[in-house]
Amino acid sequence: MADGGLNTGQPNGGRPKAPAFRHRDECALCILFAAVGGLIPAVLISSIPLLAPSAALIPVVTGLVMQGSNLGQVAGPVAVGSAVETYGWTAALAIILISALLAAVVAASARFDDATARPV
Image (cartoon, rainbow, N blue to C red; front, side, top):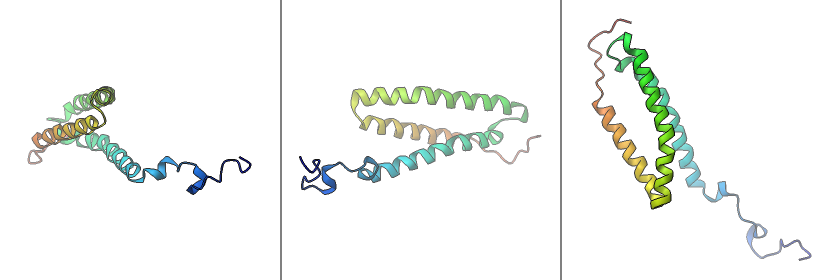
């Protein structure tokens, strides 16, 4: 112990590597997931004028979009946390995939009818 425990015969003196470098792939995927997640509010807000049936309803549609977004921010972590606690980490993947599928179905069913001009 005269060497302070550093002469253990292991690389880096027996100290564990920093978690950010040990799990580089997971870290990159988390950053990508956060970056894509940051695009969602911008896309939602910018598509409101296209989805509102009339210019007079843009504030109402904005309110509905914001309510839905806030509901997802409250209920999403609770749902994922409960599923992970009950079924393990693969349940988080299932919830994310199901949510993405539902979002794709809703986006595909949205009508972007640019043929009719709306008064602004």
